[in-house]
Each structure stands twice: as structure tokens, then as C-alpha cells.
Image 1 (cartoon, one colour):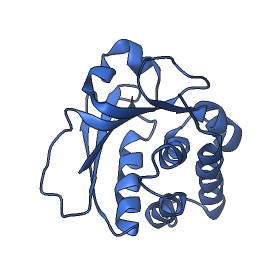
Image 2: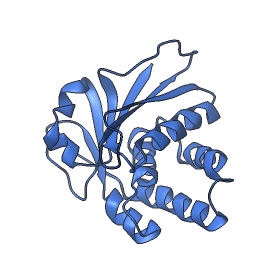
Image 3: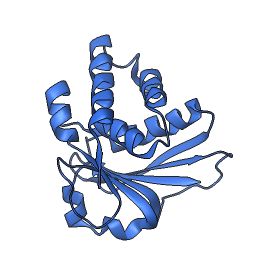
Image 4: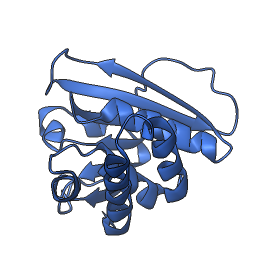
Length: 179
């Protein structure tokens, strides 16, 4: 089983991205599960979301203590907490950063904030980070992420908003770097 923990702040879309990742896994014939823990009840408060992906049915529930992958939507959370202590020894950090943060772990990074501002006009980075995660890990394909996003939000967003979010996912997929 692969365990993914997403860290963000309220309003950045951490919970939404966990749902999209779980559905993307299902689209590829795997089992996916998403859940969350809200550490605060207001916009800007730290939020953790969890995704589990496996080839078999997932019976395990609850928070993920140590993760194979950490997705960090807000890089200030790295300094505020010791997130890297919760990364498995061969795990990977996928972080919203314009440059390698030099944290001494396997890292994939992309300027999700810049891409979101350019495409969406606001710093909501969850769709950008879905593209970064897909590119860095190959755990879910770009196509599966786009399909999952379309299924979850195609009737909730305007056609133009869906198109812009899909573009954001694809753009970040092609701009992710690793260190």
C-alpha cells in the first residue's frame, strides 16, 4: 500500500486533491481512499489530507503517521513543523516551491503558486500539485488525474473553470523538477 499525506492550509484544496488522487487511482484499476484531519476550523489553519492507494481493497482507516509521499501545498509548513520526520526512509517530498528547498530528502518541486496565479488568478495550488505529483511519482497518470478532476468537478465548475484547472494540472506536470 502507498500512503500519501497532503499538507496545506484551509482554503488551498488539500482535501480536494486527496479525493482527486484516490479517484485517479480507481480510474487506473487500483483501490483508492481519501480522508482528512482538520487541525483548525478556519481558512489558513493547517490541514492534513490522506490518500491510500493499493492493488487490493483498503481496510485500514485513520490518519497516516509515516508517509511514502508528502505533498506540501504551503512550503511555510516545513519550517513550522517537522514534517520530514514523518516521511518514510525512501519516501519523496513533493513541494510547492520555485526552487529546490535543499531539505536532504528526495524532492520534486514546482512553482505551483506561480502557475496557479498565472492560470487561475489566485493562489489555490491543489490542481497544480496534482500535476506535480503525477509527473514526479508516476503512481497515477496525468490522464487519470484529468479524468478524476473532470468527474468530480465537471458539473460543479463552469466549463471555462474546468478548462483552466485542467491546463494548470498539465502545465505543472511538464514543469516539475526533481532533486
